[in-house]
Length: 124
Image (cartoon, rainbow, N blue to C red; front, side):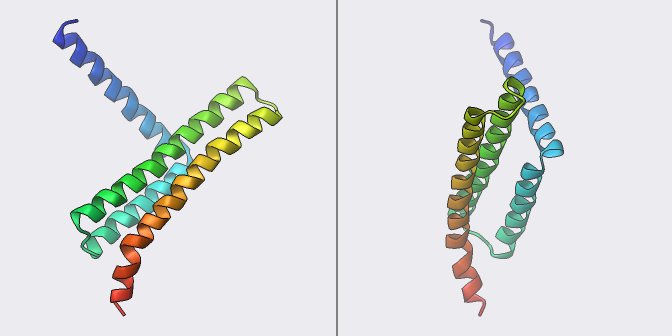
């Protein structure tokens, strides 16, 4: 495969991924909430002058939650497409996907507390 063809296909892939991210942000309330929280965390990071390590931990935590939320949305859309009416097994699959988002959100909250609670306490 020629290098030009390889790079062109990668560039097209980036375009598809960007399109998907934009669709997700425009249409999914859960991702919109997560994006708002992420924006608040970025502002807080500058206010509290996070270290490089704290920025890395915060970015990974936010990315994991938003990625899990995107995958959950995808799983739910596929499940609804395959079986639009209620089905016990589809409900089980959706619950598991939502549970994965919940677990990442709990861990992200713990990371946020580890970073910000000492900084907030130091203010008083």
